[in-house]
Image (spheres, rainbow, N blue to C red):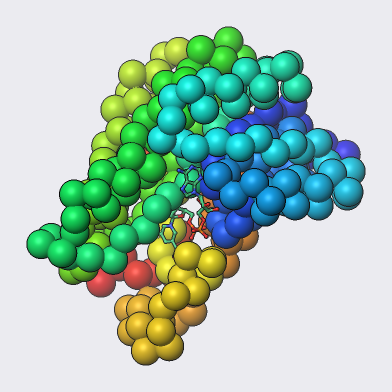
Length: 249
Ligand SMILES: NC(=O)c1ccc[n+]([C@@H]2O[C@H](COP(=O)([O-])OP(=O)(O)OC[C@H]3O[C@@H](n4cnc5c(N)ncnc54)[C@H](O)[C@@H]3O)[C@@H](O)[C@H]2O)c1
């Protein structure tokens, strides 16, 4: 039986937990060979072992997305393990919940380094292999907060707004070269990153979501699956919003 990602070799960043884990899991079950990457080694290894135990082809590689040399090592390891690289999912992120004057320069730099520079480095480092594959694809996990403004997430909004235009500019640049670049825009999603919200904060967020419930990592993973698959071969520069309607009003 053919699966939707047969023949693909994908690097997924921030895949030790949350949405990234959901994407790695779904990609592997759809036939991709998956390189699970994260700064969380023990958790990342666990995800890889779980996928291997069910017969999927997955390995873990430690990767700090803000570090160019770390990226070069992971791209090299991917090609030596699986022979090629067709797909990357830039999912890793750092969150910050402070407004303009409360955001320290250190916090600002860290959020930009992971969310925006990390996405740029991923595309830049993987590009020679994506081009060589003849049918490359990038899925950048952006955020609803890259589309709408709220108060109290200054650096995060700025980083995701940057990911949005970085994705579009890259999509245009590579449109004729065999590499598609698309983005997923998650709304409120149940992941460990959201664990520190109080019940009151959670209820406030849900009150803004027309469907009235939070999304699950798998809801986001199905969007990434479509964009990474050959079903989306005519799709580049797209913004796939998966937010239970949050962005509608
Ligand atoms: N959860 C939500 O409600 C939500 C909403 C909108 C967008 N998103 C986006 O979805 C993506 C995944 O978020 P999540 O909720 O699963 O978060 P999460 O915190 O549960 O997972 C993020 C992963 O990224 C990893 N990471 C952090 N810094 C890294 C670095 N320097 N190098 C490599 N890995 C690093 C973390 O270790 C973690 O495993 C992010 O891009 C986030 O901005 C999430």
